[in-house]
Length: 126
Length: 126
Image 1: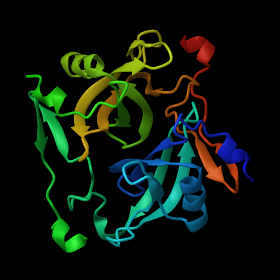
Image 2: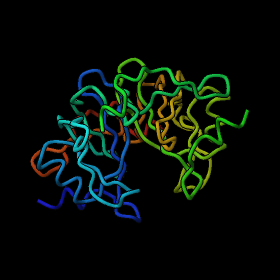
Image 3: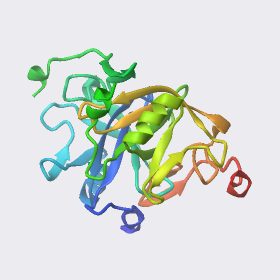
């Protein structure tokens, strides 16, 4: 049962990038990191569980905000060093800024321009 | 003009992950890395140019295969350490295995199962 975990090429820190995508719309919501335990728990609990590099601990996405990511599919890339998650984003907000997606800034003429609305004030989320 | 480059939080190796997504279907095609020069050239030349960590040099995606990724949009995430590219994948093949996407293996009951067809023999691509 652990062969699938050994197949993943963990980086020097024991991590792998995980990209979360809305399973219906295809919108890329965020990218975070997973260690072996996070990926194992993600599959076991059927929800996205990451590893926070800044806090150096497991990050149960949605634990404080309620914005859990329910898992629909996990994929591994050809080099076995990146993972994608198809998720249902509970609450419709993945970003800590209160936006649907963390990718709300678009490159335009030498600037990053915020183009997506804040759906909920972060003060009311956390 | 370089402020937008300074806004990116490059990692210790001077790199940032870049996720390429089909601009029409939303399919995540691949994830690779960019350095400052790669991102600059990507925007200038309107096509995805990565930095190959294994070869330690710029990687003009599609240079040998013809499978260029024409750029439609570049986004930066809230932490400024991940980039997404909306691209048109010329040839319909992003993966060096001859598949549309590098993410062709799905987790199923403790295994990674290849579910996507090889569209073209890699021998005929390179």
